[in-house]
Image (cartoon, rainbow, N blue to C red; front, side, top):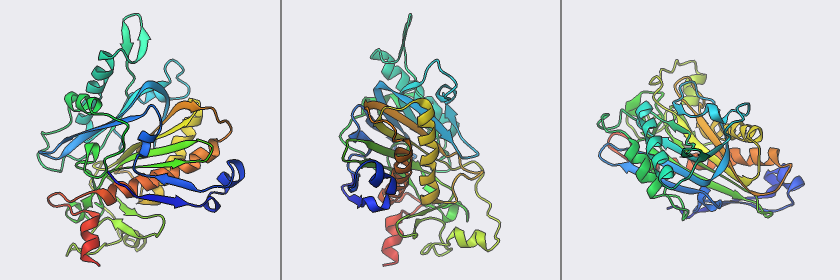
Length: 354
C-alpha cells in the first residue's frame, strides 16, 4: 500500500479558488477511493498466470454513469447507466477484470455475493444486484486458459474493505502491460492505482484506474515518460510521440489493450451530471497516456456518486478534479508495478538510467 501524498496549490485550480474557497487540494493516496464512505475495494489475483479482477463495492447503492472512449471496449450492463434509461440508475458494485471477454464472468460472482446479502434492486422475487463491468485484454501473459471466473469476482467481493488500496500488480492489474506500439517484446508492466482529492468543504473525488494501455505512460507534472515502448536494448524509451510525429506508421496489437476504471464522488449528482464527470475524467487518461483512446484500446470510465454530500453547483469543479485524480491514478499504478517475465516495470528502467 503506497504512502506518498502530493499537494497541489489552489492556484493551479482556478475554479476551486473561486467557487470552493482558497485552499490546498490534497491528493491523499494511501486510501484512494476507499476514503469515500460506503466504498470498498477488493482484489483477487490469479498468480499462476497472472491475471485477476477488482471489485468496487457500494453496497448501499450509488448513482452511476459511464463513458467509453476507446474503440475496442469490453463491457457489461452499461446500457442501464444511460441517462435516458430511467428504470435503474444505481449500481451496487463495479467489476474490473483481466481475461478479455472471458473476464466479464467475474461480475456473476460479485452478483452472487450481493444477492446472498439481500443487496440490490428490491423486487417481488428478491434483490437483483446491479453490477456493471469492464475488461482488459491480458491473454498474452502466461497461460491464456487461466482467466477470471465468477469465483474470482466472488472472492474479490468477500475480501473487499475500506482500509486503503493495494497498487501495482493486483487484481485486474496483475497482467496489465503498457507501451506496445513498437511490439509486445518492447512493452512494460502496467498496473492498478488510485488517487483521492479532498477539499476543505468535505467534497471528495477519487479514481481507481487499471492501466493496460497500448501507449506510453507520461507523468503530467514533468512530461517525462515513466513507462512505455523500449529500445531494442531494453534500456531506454523509444518515445512513441516522436515516432508518430515523424510519420512512422504504428501497428499496435489489435484490440489487446485498454485502460479501465472508476471515479467516485461523495457529492449527490444525477446520472446526467455523472455522465459529464465520466467524460471529463477521460481527460486524465489523455494527460497520462500517449496516445489514449486509440482503435486498439477500449478505454472505459465509470462514475459513481454516493450522495452523502449535499453540495450543489459544483459539476465543473468535480469534473476537472476527476481528470486530475484519473491521471494521478494511472501514474501511481504504473509506478507501483513490479516486473513479470518479459515485462520490466517502471522502477526497473529507472534503476538502469540513474
